[in-house]
Image (cartoon, rainbow, N blue to C red; front, side, top):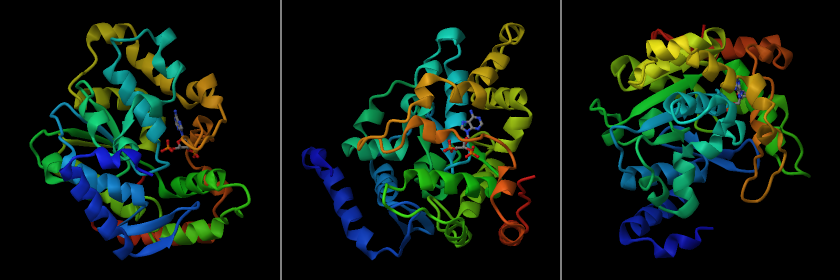
Length: 330
Ligand code: A3P
């Protein structure tokens, strides 16, 4: 599975040994597709998530210019990657011939824990020019102190989303990913797993609270957005991200309506209609196709899936989890 591993130096060998020793000792649960999820430091991760996290701990060297796009799956990762990519690179490309018209954002933004998995080391990430744009699903609590202490070692832009829409989106996604011949995951099973906190990088509530609290404690380091707000006020949110990243739009750019161009380019309508994102090709190397990341892109679609009872139970759990924190999705 990791053919290059044998070529890695002693430091990496040690980390892999630690991973191999740790994995069999962790609590396990049924996953959403064929994978199992393991409980690691309070969060449910796949084996590669855990491996990625341990490799980051031991080998990742953050830079002050690093921008980490963080999300819980199905909260708008694709969208946020596109927005931040186009904000950061707005002077490098013509909007009519933009890379986002030819590539899915996941091919333009390196996925931190997955890339480390890819070649077994941090080499592909170490070699990137600054500012590095990296994406992650890891909870804030799993990052090493050198990344989360208040010195500006790197910045995080996080997006969260109403958990009922996340659950509905994740359930659809899981069923797309389940191999042929494996019976579909019922909504009831998905609901049950989600409520127990057993979803990738979950419990979902803890993921959100980790980043949200960090954004209050270190507002220059962590920016927390809500999917619903970006839908409602995309222009304002794009300006907010640019300000946070220290690259505000100039009056000249405002006159040229660059913010509007970015919002249009990254809209669900535009992105889901690009040929590259309509492709439905899955392979062993790429088990997920680009089109799998675009479904409806709407706020409130959960009403078409979850029963009033399910909604009520989720409200109760959410109230309990967020009580006293000041956070709410609305
Ligand atoms: P739905 O399943 O509710 O439609 P992720 O990128 O984190 O996997 O999230 C996927 C969700 O974001 C899906 O939600 C998808 O349709 C939606 N999405 C993808 N691109 C989007 C965009 N440009 N704008 C808004 N939503 C988008």
